[in-house]
Image 1 (tube, rainbow over the protein chains, first blue to last red):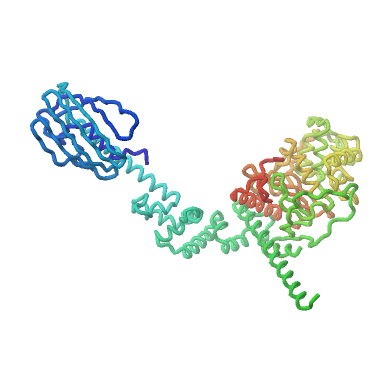
Image 2 (cartoon, rainbow over the protein chains, first blue to last red):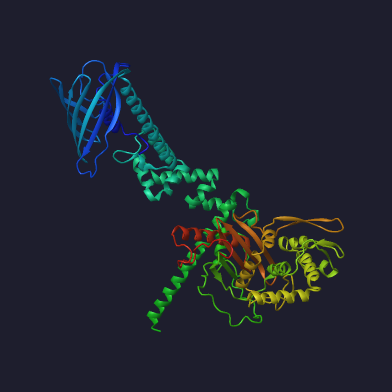
Length: 313
Length: 307
């Protein structure tokens, strides 16, 4: 997630970096100003260094306070002008909640001002001063840059979402489509995962993902009839002689195929494609025989004890 | 032993396991007073063979009568190869086939008396195709006569601590005192597999033996697991009427080595394939459980030969 630029942060950046950007015009004649800002935060054991940067102010009077993008989570309210001084309030909602108030006093070729911001992390104050440099510039450029950055961030988020969804389909991570909000909100991809859940490969993957209960999650998500799917897939695998699926998933169908391809043959007489299958089957049979023998031994032991109890020897 | 017919019925295989055949009588010298292993391996598959021993890495996992002396048949040739390679081995040396060697019984390469063959080729024929004529020719060439060579084999067995083992001939023919045990053969196999030349030859599926008379004799391995069972790396099969069907097999998957000795197995190939597969499963399951080596699990996988 950290790969993507948070739009709220960008909005805040717009708030601080574009003090007077006012319109959404393609280009807007402006002139260069330089601003120096000194920030202070309560509780910090050291003073934050002052920062100076240039920005492009639209030509004419200062009509607007520092403003965030209109579509961001920050809104400037209660703008009041009293002579050369402007006062305003700003409220940011969304992830980075903040409230603040500020004032600026203009003196022709310069200004001074301050802002107080109240955030969850604490209060922050900012002193600012600016001076006119006068060089002609495009005042709408900052907004265009911010908009481009935001668009790029949104594209990255969309790409990230697409990757997440595709990965969930490929790995049968059904849980990606559940939860509030779900990691993947793409209904097409959800349907794709549900379709894969009904194929041998997809179903096998679901069964393997015991660590996140993928089969259980997919059963609810896709309304799977697990028994029916299992039976159908095993029948299909038997028809196709798909030993890779039959061996681990279909004991009954495996027996049928083993009788046809393994039983009654010498080991070297098994067809090449069935060697692994028949070897695994031989191992299964050995283990089954062992379990059967153990059962017989246990029954014999129990019988002996019973007899001993009855006959008293 | 009751598992044998049941398994045979389940698999529908042409199994002809001699149910309950008792270990051959007659302890070889030194067999008494054997020290039991610290952690006895379980006899989980009594139907697999009259005597068997399976090890994963250096840990003995499953066994049945592993110390019972039995005729080893051509598994004897593992010792023949070991002795040859350890004492002045020169593979390019020309060996003249004696009349006696050419007349050896059992499995043969078809050598003729007076033919000369490179020692390396004869060793290949001995290990790959279990050729008794090649085996005897090598033994006679190395020691002057078979009896002297057998003396070397017994000395080597003693040095290896194979106390249930005694050889009466160089190539594995039945004899009243020709004996070994599954545990001795496992130890012998480990010593043999430490030699790269034996490991290489044991894994060959076929070779062509060229004689001085210009004959080219194609030979195929007697090991049905090679090229068929995943990870099979060969070693040696054997059969005589007294010994039954025998096998020492090695297989390696993902750094885990399984070594199996079967003596008198009804269908040694199915039994070996099933046992080896089951052993790798068990080792995999133990690894997944995080048992790790030395944690007390009988199935903990061990890396590589001797490791």
